[in-house]
Structures are given as C-alpha cells and as structure tokens.
Image 1 (spheres, rainbow, N blue to C red):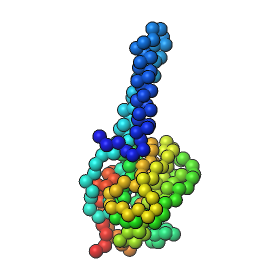
Image 2 (tube, rainbow, N blue to C red; image 1 turned 90 degrees about the vertical axis):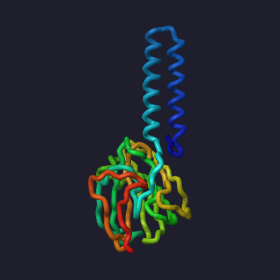
Image 3 (cartoon, rainbow, N blue to C red; image 1 turned 90 degrees about the horizontal axis):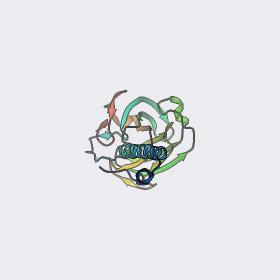
Image 4 (cartoon, rainbow, N blue to C red; image 1 turned 135 degrees about the vertical axis):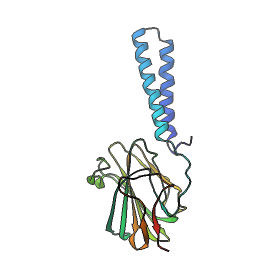
Length: 216
C-alpha cells in the first residue's frame, strides 16, 4: 500500500508509542499499572492502523476529460462569477475522514499562483466553511484559468501542498493533501465546458472519475 507524502512521521510516531507501551506492559509486574500500559498500547496500535488507512495513497487509472480533484461526495454544483476565472462552474467535493485525502490535478496545466489564507475550522459541509483556512491554487490550462480551493474542516488542521508556483503538471498528478476531513472546490470556465458529468450526492475518486467534458 502506498502512503501519502509527508505522513510517515505521524504513522511511525504512533507505532513507536505502541511498541514502547507494549514493552512496558510485558516487563511491568504490577497488575494495575500493567493493565494501564496494555490499554495505552492497544489504543496506540489502533491509532496506527487508522492513520495507515487515512494516509493511504492508492494508484489510480487516470480518467478522460476533466477529472475529480478529490475523493468524496459531490456537495454542490453552481454557476458563479469568480475574479480569476470569470463565469465558471464550481464543483465542490466533501471529503470524509475515511476518504483518500490526496488531491490531484484535474487537467494539464501550469501553476500560476498558490495562496494560503488563514481562517476558521468550521464543518466543511456548511456554507460558512468558505471562511475556513484555505489554499487557493490557480492554473493556466488549455481551457483557460481554473481554480482549485482546498478548504480545511473541523478536524482538518493542515493543508499540505506538494506543488510550487510555475510547476507544469499533467492531469492526475498529486497536488497536495488535507489532513483529517475537508472539502475541495474546482472552478471551471463555463464557456469551455461541454457538459458536467456528475450530480450532487454522487461519490467520486480523485484522478479516476470524469467530472466534466471539454468543448471540442
């Protein structure tokens, strides 16, 4: 199983804690204190398993057209006017704790800018979450400027970009990870989109599922 970049420290720390408390349990003679060490080692072992599942980074067969940036459920599809993209379609994906949290590039492009903004940590499925901590990525593509906004949630306390300004990325390449549940919005220029292929409530996988077709 592939593990997401930047997550090995979390997993190893938890695993080392498990080994440490398990050894104390084996060698400590006092039954009460030994039982406490056993409980702690069990908790840290379960935590290690959960972290491995959370930070999994499976290989993906890259789909056609414009692909999903994030694993999760389509939360909203709306037509808006954005300062950078202009008239655009915004597709929001809510990532639950059990989803893969590595995000991917939806289409070939060059990263124009990456902006980190601090903010709240409200539930990512609420409208007010637009005031949360965010990483805003703009990219130049064959369909024009697109925007990807990674939004932190209640549990998500760290957005970790894998990319830098000026990077030329292929569709499906990894752009970053949001730790512990969150939301990703993709802004696509309306004039360049032939059809939106997902619906609200639908589950998608980053890199695999096509969310939109491009005009010929």
